[in-house]
Image (cartoon, rainbow over all chains, first blue to last red; front, side, top):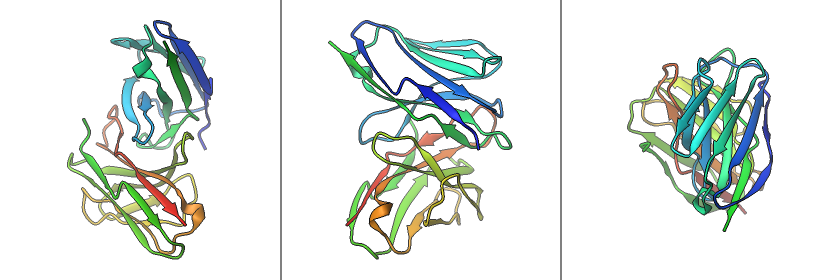
Length: 113
Length: 113
């Protein structure tokens, strides 16, 4: 079974700071690598995703960096805002079938004023 | 914005009752999933479907069952609920082409007393 290690488990960042969350995997189907954002009481919402043939993707304040050789990818949130306070999950497509995702354990981000 | 709907959103039932959690999507997605998530914890895949009349067990063992008679509908049933079934159940769907993302519903919070 796919192992996905996400760190840190929780993160406190001041408003305007940079939030960095990391994800490491063992094997993958090399389809796409998404990050999901989840607010309390809601389902996870796709935040940003990257294909493995690129090393970086930026959408507004959110950037994914992908290191294929190291089997790692990370989420960077620039100019973090209190509204970014949520739980973030990385996900990795399973080997054998690209249709399933294995999720990381989640990172609870709190952005303080 | 994903068009995937779950009902009920919140349900409190007694031990031994039979319940069905409904999930519908209007996007014509062929692949659908059920994830189980305890508050603030990681998501575990319990069932998935590649298409009509195709269902398989996920990575986490579950006493629930699913059916896929129509493309847009993927209900989950517990024949006899127990307190250990108390959790959030998230339905998701995806168009089965490489690079397409998984979309989640808002979730169904089940409490068994």
